[in-house]
Length: 245
Ligand code: 6GU
Image 1 (cartoon, rainbow, N blue to C red):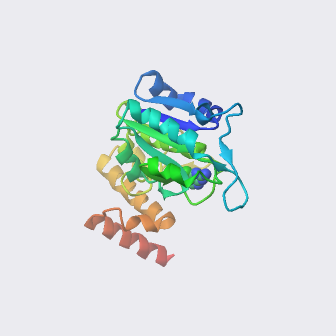
Image 2 (cartoon, rainbow, N blue to C red):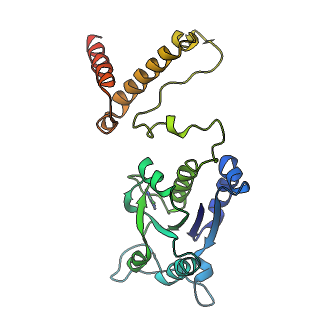
Image 3 (cartoon, rainbow, N blue to C red):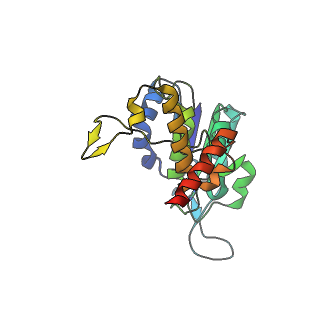
């Protein structure tokens, strides 16, 4: 998977992409990340990349030409490149969206600044994505989020111990509680069932705790989680016992 990032602040992205899992995936050639400075495509001595909004108003708008030039150059080399504008006006970024993007071979991420990009850039974009209902100063952090989430779905990136299918959201539920040694810490004991060696009982406990956590924190997720009859019974039981105390 190739990620091309069009940004005015490539330095902001460099170190997060070098660290740990993403850095390793790049070294191993599982992903390629190219930081492209939009300023390199700007014209004139001063290579201006933004300008005042027509019609007035506060803030600066990113000029269309340098961004579109960058996109056109990438597409001339690889017509299959899929172009995404990172903007708070985009569609919400979800695990399902990440799964779809992970099937593609080449993503181009345009990092807009929060005041916006010239509307004509949108004619050269395949989709617009937002990472949540809040406003970032620019699309750079959002692009990092997208690259992280998509990369870990690419086979080999997480390595042997990586099990993306057990994660929160990939199954539609929040993850169950996890413990490691010691067995007891300041009077807080690891649940007995996890020490029992009874794998069936452990699976049942984990499913129940995942359901409990999702119901308590994100009940909105339950409707889409594709729950089984048994899950529904467990949920009903959780609700009854919470009313009892
Ligand atoms: Cl993609 N960009 C900006 N500037 N703010 C955001 C965002 C993106 N997603 C959520 N907030």
